[in-house]
Length: 193
Image (cartoon, rainbow, N blue to C red; front, top):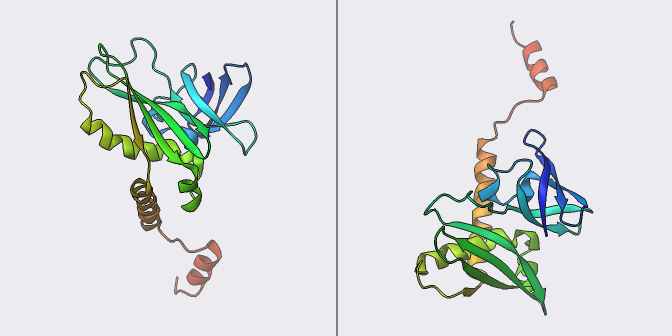
């Protein structure tokens, strides 16, 4: 779906999108694709998907490029949505380089891959970026096919899950244990102060 951000609060980590159908949809900061998180603001056009739970909540929020917004010569990779049939999800991306023809990518994945690894389907676009990173290095900029297709498999899933686990590990190492106030007070009461 497409829409326009009507409210965004970085402090509250949430906002609202007015969908193309005129229905407002809420979203949280973790629903924004990483490459767009710093540039999101009210008035910006976006693409998004609706999550089943919670009701009326947007996921995979991605800025749509406006004319003149892309800097000359800088390639931009955009998530354009997905289609699903017969247990296969097809993710659509587009590589835009000013002054050149856009290159479209389709990344195919079996839904069972997500189920087996207990990964939410909403994490699909982030997983696809791992696969596309390798594809982008291989694809020549000029004269590329109109649509480049690739598959998402176990190696990319493993890499994604390992990266998530490492991020959790690093966050937990930064967490400093502080004693509960009651424990600190009891410790001070027993001191010679």
